[in-house]
Image (cartoon, rainbow, N blue to C red):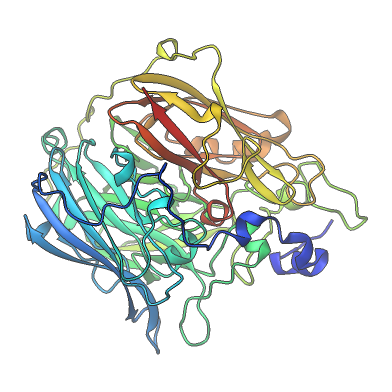
Length: 546
């Protein structure tokens, strides 16, 4: 068995031609054409809409000092508040990330996005990840605007209190734009959350985890060769809030951590190096009903988790470390052996944490240091984490209009292309089985299929699936017996008890979710949030009709 097969090594082994896997990649960077059947960009404010918060967000080129020596060229979002609370927009200091936008449920928001990117080929648009907005305000790739153009978002925030985020969503260009720095947090509060009395102010910490590779001049390296497009980008260094080797100085008190996996494709198995359990209080769509403890938490690209971090019993002078524990089974399952035969067993690459890697980057599933916490001072703390947080309306399977015939969402690899239900993305295409009805609850079954006969990953790869348009609930997970070993290494880190908009689906896993379609008709997308997969066409439209 090949003991250490890198992604570049696979390119040499099979030849780049064998991995140039489809027209979706070749055509992905084309600017969208306009069609009368699709929503047209809103380029001017609606005079009938009176916002509580009015701001402009501009995507621009900048330079930021990240490593010692030369500054790093980045793309970043710059914001200016025109009306409303100026404190609603908060920068992340010394970071290319941000800003953080803070709003309350019920507020009317107008955000004018201006594409100021220096590359004329870089169309862009903002997607408000996890928010329930009308289709024209969701950031569909079709609405991407060219440099020098703008898009006006106007919507009412109807979501629960929670940690949402925003990022680019142009087809074929999302991965590069996120790598260059375009992402920010969108934090929603509401009276129910405020009544609980969770840590606030400086004790409410946003933490965005990303991986990046730098060249000798401190510039981001992003080389989307065919193998990177097939497997996803993995960086050599971990950044938190855009900083390497982050150390947080803390007091002996309770903190609220809002953690986003903002990486392109890397999955994390978050834990304390001491073995202390994690206390989870929220997921993608806000607070849980009750705090939960986990030995570790799995966090795939696009997912968020909130932790109650209680340091009251940690003596000053102590250093804690948040790590990503090793795990296997997420990729590289069933690789070629040295004899040229396909290894379908649980050994080989699967048993070596899927040693597929980008250059010198740690492979997916390798152990990683995320950040350090230095407890430096003693403080008194009176906050108490309540046993009950906020209620969640639970969907029931029998309430779904298709309770006995779930809508199947099959994830597969065909001809070196990742596909959904055997199809790749077409900008204005909706298949008959991708039409849903307004004011219905549906049962969806996401199936990560095996791929017999494929040169790469015949036993599958982990996919974080994101559904635009709102939140859903997870009701069941099962896995194929032959892929249970890898699944067992991660399953105790799932937090399926809350509202979700992105879900990690391991190889051979079958996940059933309940999702409601309310308020708006029109077209949304659902896709893999491995951004290289998304750009290569692992995305489809679905349409809500009356």
